[in-house]
Length: 280
Image (cartoon, rainbow, N blue to C red; front, side, top):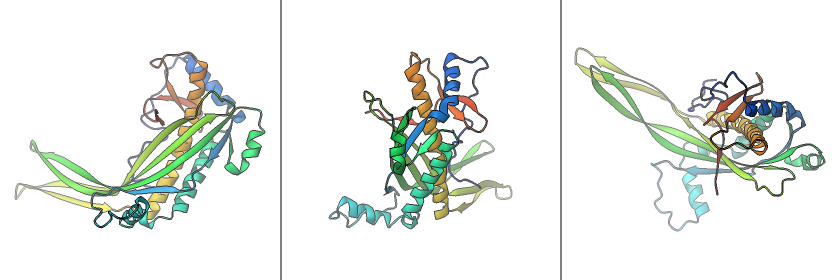
């Protein structure tokens, strides 16, 4: 599948290889990954998808007397993509991808309907509340550039784009002295642009040729699948690293944030490929 979004691979290039000598922090992280089959995670999913029209060509004339809800509905009707989406499909695709990915880490995953079974467990447990899913449609003015004979040429091309944002609360069961922490991640999906600058020697001019493969509804559903998988992997990594913080008395500068690949069973350190903690 040819994904169109600016892709941050689940275990991609932003992950730096760990040092050959195994630090106490990494050794403890490895032990935690081996304990994962004893972990239980209760996952709560949102009932709705929030949608926003952030296109700069939207028309807000005549909306001053509308309520916020009515205004948002009218603006969504002006979108090219969000207006055509089935919200239930987006939610179901995200949820299915999230659950199937989290289970690949060998943790026991419980849906909201299984909460009684979850609370009867004796081993470690966490409650993960996927508090909000949000889609924004906007236009990105992409600046394409090239250079010929020391001179720079540029062309700005408007691309349709969709942002998907996810807010997640994570709390450990039976830890009444700790409040749930809120985490955030988002990604963008764009029209696919193919372009080139061509120097025309007879006229000594530069021509610009381009074509756009516009986003379609199915692309957004595929994007929801990707975001479900990404969010699930970030969830596991966050639980793992929260356990490390609680066990090892390290300063902020000494700490490494680890990601775990359940397919090759390896730990990697990363700085940016992770949830963002939202401070109050």
